Amino acid sequence: MIRVMLTDDQNIVLQGIATLLELSEQIEVVGRADSGEACLEQLAAGLRPDVILLDIHMPGMKGMDALREIQANYRIPVIFLTTFDDAYLRQQGAELGAKGLLLKNIALEELVDAISRVAAGANLLNTADLPHTEHMTPRENLIARALAEGRTNKEIARLQNLSPGTVKNYTSNLFSKLGVRNRAEAIVRLKELGLF
Image (spheres, rainbow, N blue to C red):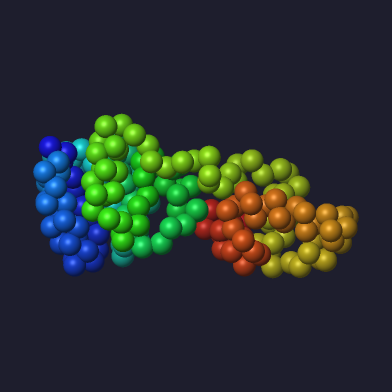
C-alpha cells in the first residue's frame, strides 16, 4: 500500500481527490493539509507518507516553498497537482526536486499510475523539454535585461551596436530558452525567475 499525503487549499478538491484515491486498492491517504504550513506541521509531527501530492498556488506558503522545505528536511517525493501546465513551473519544480507535475483534471488511473511510479523511484519531469536559462549567453543576458526594462528591438539594437534583425534572432533564441512565445511572456518569466 502506497501512503499518500494531499495538500490543497480548496477543501472540495482535497476531499474529491482523497475519495477517488481511496477507491484504489494500491493507495492509502494518510494525511490531508489545506496549506503548505499545515503540510510541514504534519511532517514535523512525524507523518511519513511515501508520496506527497501538493498544490502549487495556495495562500500563505506557496507549493514551491513547501517543496523546498520538504526536500531539505524530509526528502519525500513530491508530485505537484495544478490547474495550469506551465513550462516555468515544471522547470522550477524540477530544479527544487519535484518528481512530477500533473493537472487536476487527470484521470484516476493516470494519477494512481503516476503515484505508483514516483513511489518506486521514477521522475516524471522531463527536464530536457524545459527552459534552460542557465545556458543564456552573455549577449542574451544583456538583451534579456533590456527586455525586462521594456526596451524595443530598435532601442536594444542601438544600445548593443547590433542590427534590428540580429536583435530579433537573439530574442527568438531567448524566448526558446525561457519557454515563452512572446516579449510580454518573456518579461514576466524573467521577473518570476528573479533574473532582473
